[in-house]
Image 1 (spheres, one colour):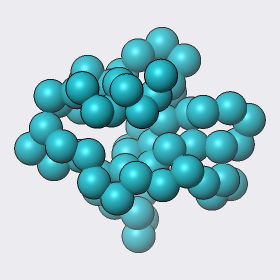
Image 2 (cartoon, rainbow, N blue to C red; image 1 turned 120 degrees about the vertical axis):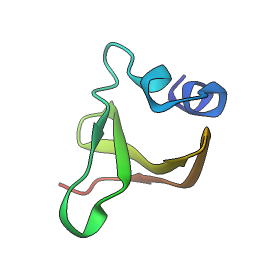
Image 3 (tube, one colour; image 1 turned 60 degrees about the vertical axis):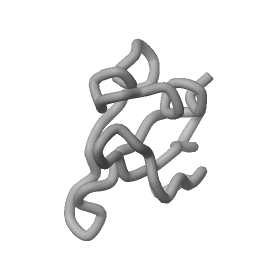
Image 4 (tube, rainbow, N blue to C red; image 1 turned 30 degrees about the vertical axis):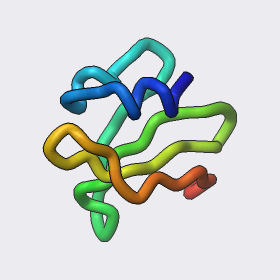
Length: 61
């Protein structure tokens, strides 16, 4: 569900769905967005001109 939302999004607000907890990362991860999968697991990605790049499935906590 999260990957489908990222794939079909035309702008970052299209991914701001209930439960995803979309937020930008800070510091050396500036420009990277994160959404919740479950527990500490997140999908992180860059979103540029309607396209997602460098998708990762990670626990960065």
